Length: 252
Image (cartoon, rainbow, N blue to C red; front, side, top):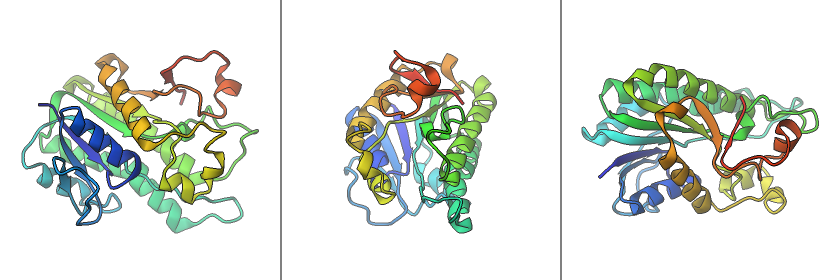
């Protein structure tokens, strides 16, 4: 039985990824910040108290794995606080960078040093097309600096990890799972774009994400993909042209 780990599984996409992997026959570990979380299926091994803002997150995960070696790791945890040039927030920016782009380095470090990653295995960073510099346009506008900046930094972290892990046969890929109807997107007011932007339920995005991951080969390590294609990427056609494929490899 393959073994998977979903980091950031208390709700939304992470919860659905863990549920889908378990139903697909994976022995699944999942991390949550708060104790007593009950939404995960009983067959999922829950590692509680894992907060990616804290340096000990990787150690807690390694201890929770109890010596198991992983075939698939998905880092899904994220934070999104809206901001403009008029109202940036230093504390919010630091938190976004910590969780989205600093934590993955230390998680990878602890899992590797603990010999918790199988060879071969897959190490997936859930980022977003918002982390693509090429897809940011004048027409789209500015703002949300730390959201975009932390995701772009996470993509860079993933690219560098793919180089470090290449000879270890650990495939590292960054994934934009799609525009979703989640508490996170609703909390920042993006629910107004759900219908026009083709937003899907997290369970739908989880299924397409896992199906795509299953097709990945080591030749694709260090790349950035939208498994659901360009449909929910507002600037895709303006930047990349028409008749784009699905899945779509995204530019940096």
